[in-house]
Image 1 (cartoon, helix red, strand yellow):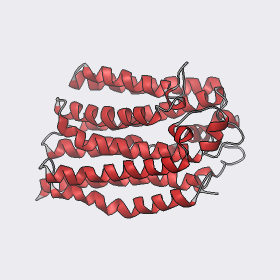
Image 2: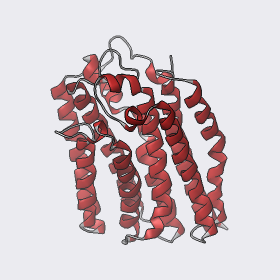
Image 3: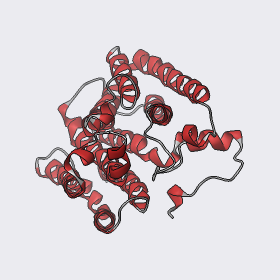
Image 4: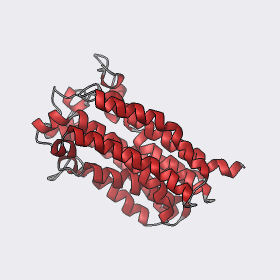
Length: 306
């Protein structure tokens, strides 16, 4: 049993229950794209501390709100059962009631909206559009009459949310412009977040099939899903090379390649393990994205000190 699947203490405190619901292991997926984009803005001579911190905190709140939404909506749809292989879900486990999780979701999204108002005041109305889109995607992923994650659309909207919206939105806040240059960060960060979802769906392929949750893993099978994982990882690592070759970034962005051994180890795990042991690969892919984001940040800011 991996660390990510170990049950909590028999009688967790109220704070511990909310921490479990927030799923801290998923937070690199929210923070890494913003960190990498801050590096890109610095490289182009733009930086404002308060908006940068607000972008990071807003991204974390949106991720936590999405985790709350998935927890309660998956339970209501019967996807989270006692056969669940992933980390504990508080609604299914009875640690928090549906009403409590709904309330927590509204509070967290409300705090994110308040930060969005501040960011809109500093950067302009497009921030409102990005914020509304982000909250709607977070709710629609598992909720509503046509949940995106249940109809093979999870990868698409995870890429749009964690890649394009997070990175292009942060770059806009820090520079005042939507610039295609931000795609050099948005695309690989979005792909690495998709990789996290792919591991999740590969682990749950049998339980999702049993509950009629049609992820791409369910539709195309386990072997295709492993190949999908390899494809998005390879594309993510091509981005820094192309960024340097095209003159869009310094050679230092190739520091991201220091994380390749981690990616190779994760690929091996995906081919050797199934079911609950894949929780290790799930956490590892989140860590890979964080390391990648930190390394590309470092690669973009190092030239500023030379």
